[in-house]
Image: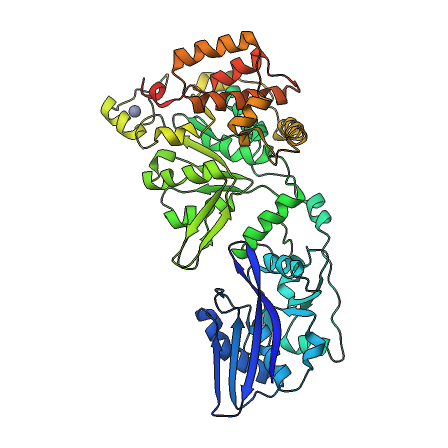
Length: 512
Ligand SMILES: [Zn+2]
């Protein structure tokens, strides 16, 4: 008799049903797993054999064939241990196949029969629910995460014995996770706060606009200008995640094994600071068993590239496509995997190799040739995708001493950001986007209209600065965000004038 146990495997961010078919035949003792398993699945044989025996069940001393179907679906990871063990236990007559038919199983077994948590439980449970599975048994370590999903009964088990006993004499309790509670209680405090940043009003304003409209931003300034500190403060003014966004992000962190066991829901927008020595695979995603990279871990949040020109040009260029499409496709021989990558790019850099070009006190020691070679790393097409480009001057000691203002706190700035985001969400509710930065050319025409006088101003700016068509749309999007921060339904001249200030660092300006 062949029995069938249901489980699932994750490819990209989605889970696919896998049937574990177990057949035990008379013949020389053997234990084989077929159906495109990777090494971890193959090693399952040794773990399952020990776990079954050490849990007090008999293990067939015959020829065991496990088939993971469908065969053409790639199966990876250690989550197949539990369904394979269940197939064998059913085959040994401990349980009737019938009692497990509305169930799915996933989990890694240790040699003594304990269950260990696995990666990617959230997408697995979502996938199982979608195919109509009513119950799923997962390792206790994963149960809080699994139970974020409504509409499927989730049980957590400590060991293989618990799972078998669930069907015999001591049923496990259905576990519920209150996702709203996580979101409500999510810690609203942040490590860095704008109230600790003196001066730099223009840069702070640009960061507020970036957060409000989801725009990319590049800060250029000498060492000591505070640009890195301000970048770190940026996380504290981002709007909270919507539940759908939180779930999407949690799926990503789940497959990467980066969730906390106790609080398995991502409740804050990610802020990923990446070092320029990071590998292209680490940033973009990839590897032989493809995993999401930093750009996907920064989904719905921020990717911060400090010392941006120090990154290999090859890495910077690969960012162009996800910046445009909001996703990354990783191609493999047999299949390609798509990961979401809607992040805000936040860059910081020195204006020249020595760092002091344009500084009011220190002398720049770089030749024009050195400066040009340095800036050449940032290609025009990449810069074209960065809506806001600002210069952050270093404040002199005297200036710093003279600032006695109480700088505005991140909390206050964030309130305005949230308001502006709400206006955008309402305006774009039928357009399938959330922020101004996502407007297509078509939608810019629809939502970023300006009056005749503003058009004249814009025309002369285009001539003066030699703006490209792409730039034109970007400036209108920023003007739209400034208007939203101002709670103005129309883009007025003042909004457009402000938006024009942030285009200053086209490459030619930097060189000039
Ligand atoms: Zn220099």
